[in-house]
Image (cartoon, rainbow, N blue to C red; front, side, top):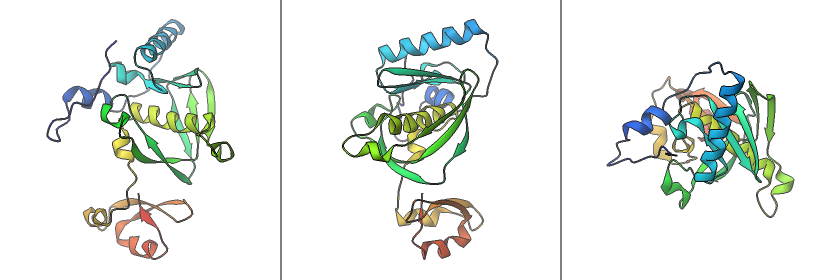
Length: 209
């Protein structure tokens, strides 16, 4: 079973990666049999490409579906849509099967601490990190929260490269005055503002995400 991967050369992304993993997938209708077959394919895909999750688009299937597999407890999501993202964020090091080099050199991303997801097969689901359980190792709850966002991102045409957390000052000079940017406070609160108003937030200790 083929896995779509990033084969960028000299900064140019291969067309297959762009077609499947940089292009949003819309919701579609499924019969019971079609949904079961798609779930079977994703489960089989995880056996061939072991990981914590997998999206249909990573297998070259333009359907809005993914599977989360933490502690060998697979959760199949059909037509998942994130309906709520907590404004508080946290940093996490992520790798992606479709970007092989990140499996050995994970990317530091910023994720919401809590999300709500609406699905066709399981109704509304809630994922939230478990800080109390993250003392010695990452808890299953926190992993599921990250993986859910990671896999649904794939279905929205977003990869972890777009979720990189950076505080590089040079980044501040790439925005137009009226362009909206996302900023994070010292207490991990997020706010979206126009760049021309960013300075007042910098003075309060905010950083551009």
